[in-house]
Length: 307
Image (cartoon, rainbow, N blue to C red; front, side):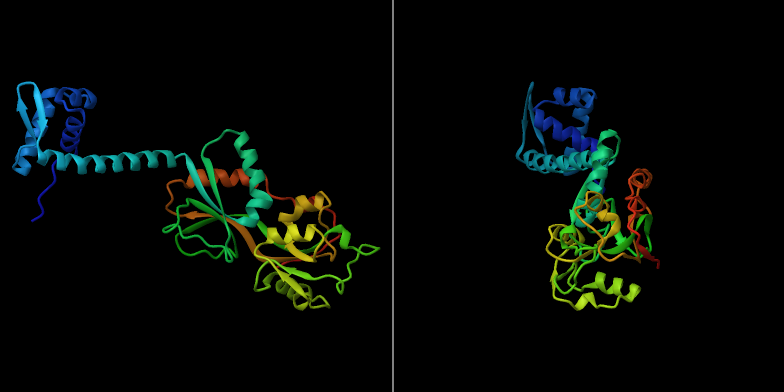
């Protein structure tokens, strides 16, 4: 049969008495009587069947057995203290996982405004490159995440939709010919992902006469990199219209082919259904909804291809 452990308060009294080298000081720190500390030590000595202290008058000496036990207990109590401290701190912090493109093109501005409000929880956002947006709340140290998805999340995941993905061709104004068109024979096409999925989805929806996905190309890792390279005047790129709003309004980017395709994907704020921080995450989602990129601000005479 498993032998029951001594009470935690008894072990704590012993550890403090060793650390402070005094029953009296240990009692003061623990807000109990010196007699109570002495009784707790006696309980432990009876439990282990050995002396933990040698008492000679007012002098208190820890035995070798006591030193061994105290060393392990000090480590254990330190671990408990750190766990409690971390738990308390994390109650007012949201650890957020975010795709790199979204972080750079939109969320950083949102977090800057959020910080001005001096609100809680504090947001600890981690920008993470993801070929396919994904989070594992059991294995990764996050409370919530913003993911690009079709919305069909696995069981146990709660989601709040933020905004839809609309794909549009993008380039620098310097690439436009007279009259505002672009000569596709002069410029490479940029793909934001190795599988070229964004141009393929755009072509499938618009039935565009020229297969842009098979033109001479350059391949990047993210939509944000693609937007930066396009704004620099190097290539014809494709991007999420909502994430390009700021660059379009500042005339660093233009939409040379006036066709926007709704992919069926959207950005969602997701969390475990059982999250104890669910209310905080929902409040943060309400804040983000006030800063959703407004694609209607830009009059581009676009043809919209809805999913």
